[in-house]
Length: 282
Image 1 (cartoon, rainbow, N blue to C red):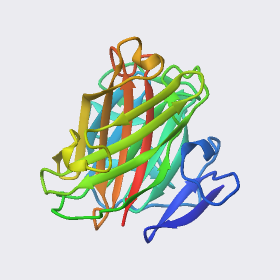
Image 2: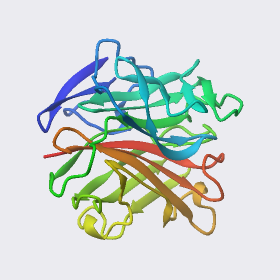
Image 3: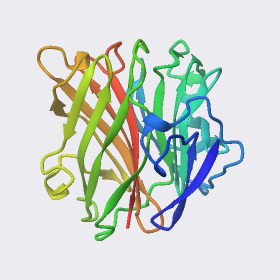
Image 4: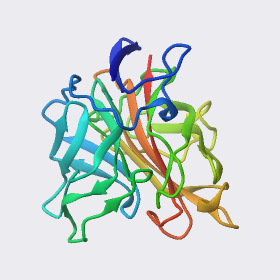
């Protein structure tokens, strides 16, 4: 089932929303078998930003010349001749789209296309590749929304797919300052059978001006391992690194999509933990 809700004046498509008590927006209520053949999002002519995290592939951010969509499901992107992955036999789950962003997770199959000559990645149904993709703002403005609300998340997964998915939640703040724009985060990733991970930038979402996560170029941002946290197996005895990548999008810079990846040792290893989150400003 695909259902539309309105958040901050723009339509949000949520795949497989369930449960009572009104609309909820975390991955725990997304039907991982859902499709969205009836929903569409127009990302415009590009260029695009693709943030991804997950099993084997690790975590990163790409400028892409093309993004292929089926409804709101991203089925491939092209960043270069060496990086042009396709969904292959995977399902696209936890998916949705709004405004200038789409999000989801490839899982339960084998990737096709090209990824730097690596053998095709095969992902478990409870693991996979989390992504947020869309059309970032050309340049971060000096002012923008001051209130942000969560729109949706993918379910939290462990890279080896041996645990049932969990729930991501939290808050975000943006300190707009042109090329010195910073993104403040206060996030919680809960993974049953593993642990609870808390991710917070300096100042958290309440004071994003102190954050380590800042604009890299245009509307793209990333911090690959500058943050640390503790929690379950991903962190071992000494804590783990937190990698964040994402983009600011929307005509009024009123959308933020990001992926978070927790690891000790190397990104994408069997016990790493990943999720994607989307926020709307007003």
